[in-house]
Image (cartoon, rainbow, N blue to C red; front, top):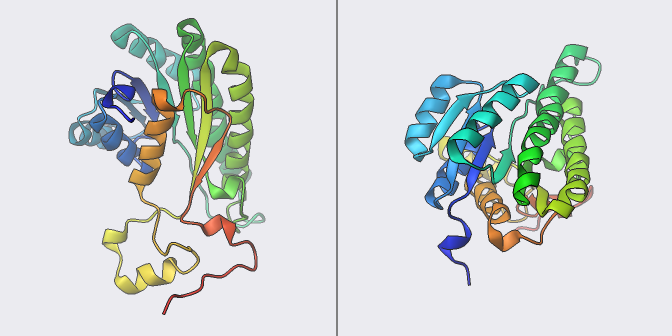
Length: 256
């Protein structure tokens, strides 16, 4: 039986809080009585989200800066006494073909999506080991494991690396009762801003004929952070409405 006590009293660092998925995580997890610490690059957006989601705290953070990460992690630990979970949702995605993609854009993408995850895990794992408990949830992508996406080589590479890092972290941290998992969303759109024709067109490749919503990802993240998921680690959870099971020649059959 699912109980609200399985979710409460968790101190959660949410990295990349102001994206669509990040905002949903802030709202949903706050509603489940988790203490949310929002981290991101835009102070104004962070402040607005903190108020809107009733989150506990917010900090501007450059995820490529190890000193900044260590400073904020130390501050959170001093203020709240523990760090129970990290949701790593930071990422950038330059839309360029391989020949047009600059080396700097390639490096920036890997630095934010992959190196930042490494630095955040490194800083928080030290604390979680002492606690002998903790949860890491990495927001990945279908592009990192199940499908190829033209013009997104840097993004796909960074997400594939993120999944590999997650599995390694899961093995290394398991003796300390710390889990690590990832979530790979399908197409996440704001359907409220689209016409019916646009929605019908963009959902054609999705068997369930609907977009993944930020809340879908947030509820999975909440589950993985909860005590209900204490024996789940090293797994990548795909939430895509069935898109990835079609295969290269797959198609969706309309029901008349």
